[in-house]
Image (cartoon, rainbow, N blue to C red; front, side):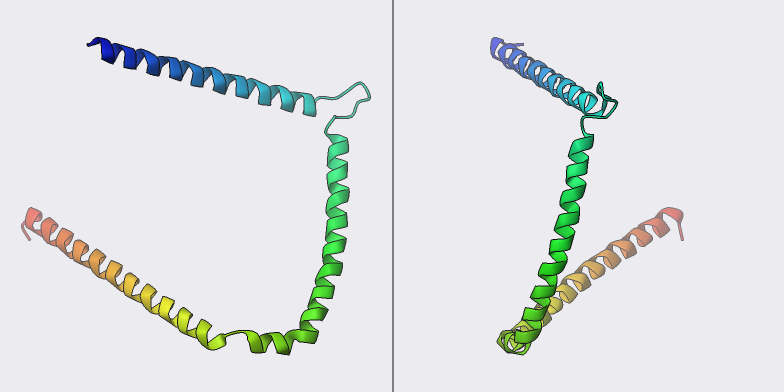
Length: 132
């Protein structure tokens, strides 16, 4: 083993040791954090309980406001729906989708044809091997 190879191998070993040390420290930090969040404090409650209550309240508020905003948006779209529908380039969309579908059909046909060829070849090989 040359000196260069030894230096390369030793340098890689050091990096691996640092990676292992970093992973261990991250694991210890996460474990300690989870332990502190889930333990019971002097009051008998978990430290994460107030956080979860706040999240629950926030989710309820968001749900109520989403309902209101959705209702307003639906009314706006219903009032202006015909005008907006006229702006949608339906013919262009139809052409693009039919083009994509045609390409997809061709790609699927090519793949199926290729797979069938390979299957036929495999069957022929097996027949030859078995003497049929």
